[in-house]
Length: 195
Image 1 (cartoon, rainbow, N blue to C red):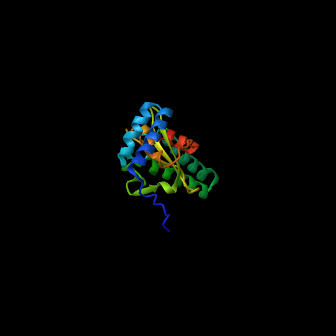
Image 2: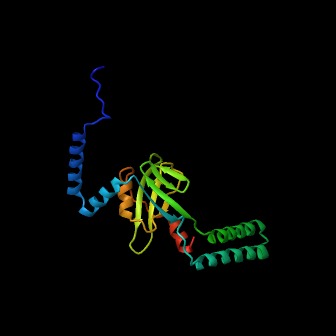
Image 3: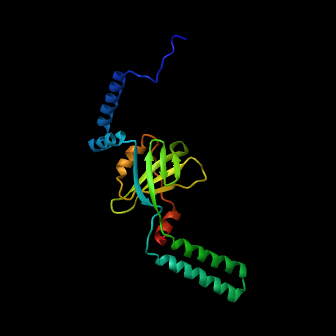
């Protein structure tokens, strides 16, 4: 029993040498800008910003066309074929699109900490997530995509809204693996329609 080694209390000198060795390896492999950003981010315990709950596109002309086509199809089926069930289904579909298209995004407070990522009152712990990806195009949308460990959950999309994607990536890379998440066909169609 006298030979138990306590790994929780490391000597200060051993920590300094191991951290300097890691920094030397990091600087040898990465550009200086990324290393500088990582050093700044590692000093902070959390990052936070405000962002809308979803991507909002005010131009919805395609959505209006689809709603009108659904209603016209419902009326045509009702008049010519007397098909009440399909007509009701098409009317309800156009109603859902109408209501969902008029929904405005709310402003969320996003916090990225060492335990997980929270969006207002919803907390996504790192242990419940598989991977992340920062989608970034200079003139377009900047968003953080999280893949849940639960197979039935879709990707969780969080808008970066003016936050530096490199800083967010540098902060999260210590806790989650980075893996590219492809944008699904439904997301493409939804953004195109203005949903």
